[in-house]
Length: 485
Ligand SMILES: *Cc1c(COP(=O)(O)O)cnc(C)c1O
Image 1 (spheres, rainbow, N blue to C red):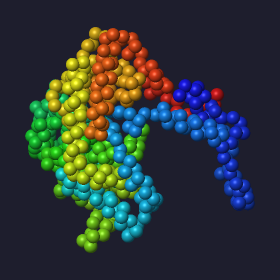
Image 2: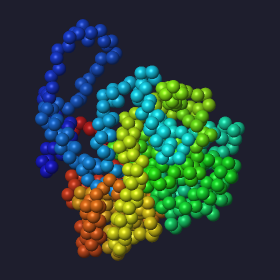
Image 3: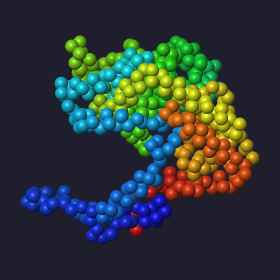
Image 4: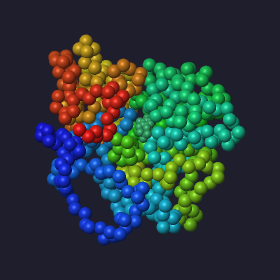
């Protein structure tokens, strides 16, 4: 949209006295007079004054400046941005689901509790765990819940000296953050050049002060940790628990289960793997599963299926406590169950395989032009270390910005921190061969542009409404409110 009028903020479009609505006269004029003086507004509320058409154009134009999975390819690594089938939305929006009150008693909520219980059981099957809670609201919240549960486990055995968590240096940033919030000290463990955990470096870190080790498998480089049985044995021999970050479970679906690998606790991001639209801070859901023997520690309240086939909401004094006000983010749970049931176990297994095939196809199609630091078969994602030809001075940031000109969302950049020019790509299983081929063609074009006209790539994007915001200024001095002109 080139019309400058529509680039303005809604406050800038405001004109004194313009209206897009009219409210009826109050039917209770006396009630206004009975509001205590100290509760009455002292000054104008300062809302923009605009007509209806201006409001419609403002928001409609703004929505077309937005990029989402529904508008284009979004190959963000470590944060699965797969297509979210619309049937899930229909299910979650059904009045019988959307209009439920969170405090409705169990006897009037049997259908909702059946949804909770079915989803928890499906996740337990997928993860190879004994039981899941769906109460945590996000991946990081799931991590916090899992680590607090690990603490509760050690406490329940009277083992008070376990205050450390071991986390690989390639881990997602939320891992150390959650450990810190849980009151645990983070001990990093080095990765080998291929991105897997250095087992020799791990051995001396394990002792009776370690509460847990957190791992992501396949790790952030999309590499499967082949040493996992040995790592699990070492962690358990030290009396610690092994935690699985299953935020991006895509490549594992129906193929391998964390429970079978020796993990004791795990979380899953329903908003990544199980297809809820996400980004911009919500909504999410981070269910936590535990192996047999830890179920009693799961957070309150729990949903149980009774012998007569009905469901109940129970709380137990053995539990680690509460982590959420209710039974979690119900609409996200509904979407995940809808997704799982519509794919079925065969469909889920196919999704995992396709996610892996698509990632490897892109990797192999671009490796002659982009630097591939870890050269092996990947799972759902992989990492380039920038362009192969470093002489042009074109960085990963420039490539990412140039992609926007071609209508693709940029991949994850400068993460993981293992390489200087990380460019992390995860296509997911939901993209067609046509989309993937056109992405490959564009990535190849950009590499050639970088050689022929590096300045043009370094000054990209050239076609977006906002070109190069000052990242540092935006982080240090964000302007989040409208100041009257
Ligand atoms: C996204 C992600 C998380 C955090 O999940 P949130 O829902 O954003 O809190 C944790 N670990 C990994 C590996 C992730 O990709």
